Amino acid sequence: MTSQSSILSMLHGRASMRPGDVAFTFTDYAVDPAGVRQTLTWSQLSIRTLNLAREIRRHGAVGDRALILAPQGLEYILAFLGSMQAGLVAVPLPLPHPGSGHDRVGAVLHDTEPSVVLTTSATANDVGDYVASSRLDAAPTIVEVDALDLDAGGGLSLEPADLPSIAYLQYSSGSTRLPAGVMLSHRNLTVNFEQLMRSFFAEKPLPPDATLVSWLPFYHDMGLVLGVCAPILCGRRAELMSPVSFLEKPSRWMRALAENPHAWSSAPNFAFDLAARKTTDADLAGLDLGGVVGIISGAERVEPATLHRFVDRFAHFNFQDHMMRPSYGLAEATVFVASGVWSESSPAAHFDTEGLAAGRVQPCAAGKGTALVKYKVPQSPLLRIVDGDTHRECPSDVIGEIWVHGENVAAGYWNKPSEDQSCFGATLVDPAPGVPDGPWLRTGDLGFIDGGELFIVGRIKDLLIIRGRNHYPEDIEATVQEITRGRVAAISIPVNSTEKLVTVIELKKPAHLGELSEVKSDVTAAISNAHGLNVEDLVLVPSGSIPTTTSGKIRRAACVEQYRQDQFVRLDA
Image (cartoon, rainbow, N blue to C red):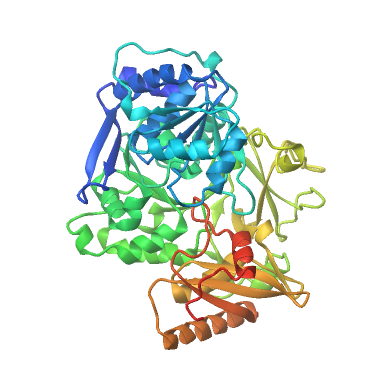
């Protein structure tokens, strides 16, 4: 891939070399539970992208923003590519549903002031009403992608020189703050994809007939890069469905992995639990998962217990441990930073829980302490563990902030003042020979390197400080999930000027009071044993009550606010 190549030049190159080959297949389960398949060949994708770009250019100039508010489907992919082809900055977003609060989408509308909003005929009225109700200074043009004749001959050609420095804005999920638009260039995207391929396929290349299987939402960084961009950048076919199709029937994902040659896929941690629990043997009758190349587990903390359950559940369908690929990344670095290979023989490393709480790294025997997933330290991008106060590299036995340097790191946040850009452009003090002093991206994640492996312990902003000691909420949540199997939020609340632990626990099934009290006593005992903590309050809530980001990360700050306002509907009230 040359430094001049972009996802658009790659797309048109594939269309000229393999015009009739299928590029994308989207299976829609909304109208027919058996699924209705729609496909685009490379040639169709190229011509429709060029024609849509011509239409978009009628309503906006190079560098203007084009928002995508459309359902998951092939039109969404065309809207994303067509916006960039027209030289506008693409802004992929979730479709606002009528009647529900859309502070995030509304905030982005005002932040970006788009000249065009791309949608479909089925959702155009709702989107139009929503945009009108947002009271923008200048009303954008609403374009219905599926209502245009995009197969007409002759397309608009845009040379790379016409492309603006920003290809698209990836709005972060906002787990700890208001969403911010990460400004990503074509170079960020292609470089990060090269880094990702080197990391995953260094020893064994991705087969030419591989299929990229995804149900992740296109507006989320992992769903966009792996579901939309990766098929174009690596020239492999994509087999796609919507997140709702997966949630309704997780076996659809498992079947797609088995039915497509050399499937490569990705999902957040919760999806592996869901698929293992909800897929029956009958769902996979006669199918074999032995051809799966790999499944990335990313977007939220990777739990060793979840990976083990998933591998164990599908082992008799020939699923093997090394197919699981725990990964770490963030939108500010395009998406990918580091990956590992799961192994049932040496699944995770264990570290003294007391030591971690004090910021020290003390390995301990398997089965003791806190289990953490291993990641390979990447050669590119560069990664260092840094003391957030002194900006010096940490000794190997000390936990610090993960800093990243490379051409995959974004230029900054769209339209944000300099004080909100502080995670970008950090400088190392006294770097080792050969290590650049800057610019470094401060990820806001805490971790350490031990024995040449990277370990991630949690978000700095989510750290719980109780009785003067640090506790990582993910560790407490993992302890509780072993008992309840549902989503959990561990938060701290000030009580009489000291911080107290509160856990909000989703229960999947309705339970009578006897079962509720049993859950409470089991959880209280487990937290006391594993973490030496008393729980001030255990809040048992129905499934779906805990606020999350678009990628399924828990919004702990929002949980604190809801708890303080007494807004959780308690099953034990």
